[in-house]
Amino acid sequence: MTAGIAALAAAYILSQFYRSFLAVLTPVLTDELGATKADLSVASGTWFIVFALMQFAVGVSLDRYGPKRTASLLLAFGAGGGSLLFALAFSPGMIIAAMALIGIGCSPVLMASLFIFAKSFSPARFATLSSTLIGIGTMGNVIGASPLAAAAEAFGWRGVMLGLGLVTLAVAAAIFFFVRDPATEEGTAGNSGLSGYLELLKIPLLWPILPLTALTYAAAAGIRGLWAGPYLAEVHGADALVIGQVTLFMALAMAAGSFIYGPLDTLFGTRKWVALAGNFLSLCALAWLAAFPLAGIGNITIALVLVGIFGGGFGLMIAHGRAFLPPHLTGRGVTLLNFFAIGGVGLMQFAAGWIVVAANVPGEPAAAYRALFIFYASALALALAVYLWSRDARPERGPLAEIARR
Image (cartoon, rainbow, N blue to C red; front, side, top):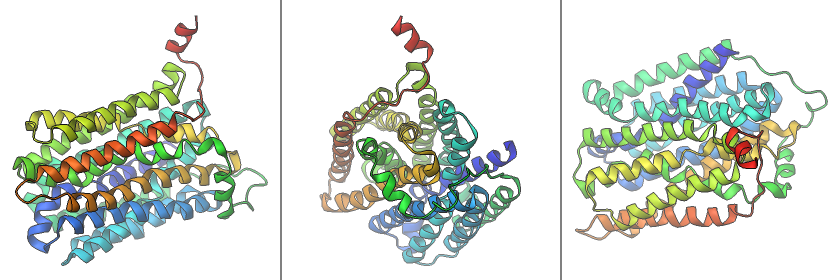
């Protein structure tokens, strides 16, 4: 099991890389392929939308065929093939098609891991295990920052993408050989169709959790994955190396945020209020960016780091929703939650592209990005308001909760 989880962790590092690397390659793709901000927004959004839509098929496949075959085959043919297509791209349309394939390939990786955690470990450890895996995987964000900028400068972006395609195929092979499927519960094999999702949507306790699940990660992923690059270049005159450094700090913050969120639910004895506090602080950082888009690049970097840290509650939100899932729908349940999480990022990316174009003021590039940050902050505020109505899913009491009780 250890070797299998290590292989899945490596795959999740690749998944995090593939969703965030366009920010660093924006200048070269614009120069060599004529890709516009709208093209790259569509490419980034396509990855997230395709990834999200695939969750329905992934959930059924996990319950029916298990994580080994689901993750290894999709990763090899989707992400491996998409990386190779990206390396050969000669137009923005090919970049979009490649990102769609990569989204298909990355779609089962995290869910296969969470499926194993849910089936093979105690529920009390789920949030910590999932947040730890997400934190490790977020190292892909780090690789997709200044290391990618340096590699692309040394070997060319096509060479880098070709090498990544070969690495992806090797990781897919490792998943196939090392992952072991958890035992299937008796009497559940026949209940593995799409109808299970309708059963899940009939659970009222999930409804107020879903909006924040869709938006907790959206701003951090969207800004880190795409908008940080053009924002820093157009408003602050940053070159590729500076963009790489700032996005590296944000990537490290996102990784740290996942690790920080992981044990907090058991430490404080609550999931709901940890999620509310963290996302409120993320909202504050976004509001500051909206108010001061022309602040010095040092202050901007600090604000982006805070968005990265406090936007790292994805694993906690999955754990909150997972507490209300029936056991026979574990695979489809976690993929439904992931559909909202990743689909929210994709929809926000498409909408953000439209907002940046619509709010553009000639000679005043900060106006478009002020509108972008207002958009992210407003959407998150609405989700938090709905989440206030959710029922808490309290894990085993942690030390601070015990002290408070006494």
